[in-house]
Image 1 (cartoon, rainbow, N blue to C red):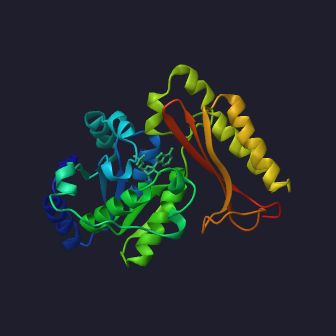
Image 2 (image 1 turned 45 degrees about the horizontal axis):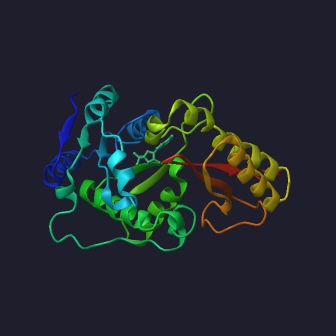
Length: 285
Ligand code: AMP
């Protein structure tokens, strides 16, 4: 089967309508391209749950709070198409900015609660941009299922919230983070790391896993988080934005590990901001 590259909402809707008439289940995997095995794992999860799979490729200007980050974001559509072809994806939906945000565009979807704090506090407007584009992509595709990575844990919760609040009839599937052999979470931004930065980068995952183990064994949260921040600075991160213990459903700060807890971090290597997160399982679970 050949992969169709569609660039207009009308052509996407026409295609989905044909599938719907045939009673076929449709999944969508939203991405900003520069595809790696993390994205492809979402596609594989989608394939096992729906007959038809749409991958979207749109570098969404509204979710970048930093113009140079947007300018430097990798754009590799030809390679992305080549990676999707063997996976039996039906459609690559790759609209231009004009198609997504035509003249007069004035609507913002803004999610409260889980959007606040963590990346929301450090990247003003970021989650409004994410929520707006994800709402559009879900409505444009009319998908039954949408797959998102736990790598962007706060984003996953923002999407779950908006779908519930706006009664969008799309099931949201969270998929595990895919990592390199040294446990660095795969990210399109990793391609921009210098060899020296790439050597330092896995410290973020290493520190999170180690700290999660300490927290699970009953060590004090404040001192464990302080030690984690210090470890990242010593490892060579230029700036540690946050290392936080949060409730995995509400993202409220936790003073102790209880129920579902998540440890989340963001840190900078030069101009590159890396994020990661891991579950913290209480001792008796
Ligand atoms: P992005 O292209 O960075 O916007 O990511 C598109 C989707 O891929 C989002 O749902 C991300 O959470 C997911 N994703 C990115 N990196 C990974 C990874 N290493 N493992 C699993 N999913 C990922």
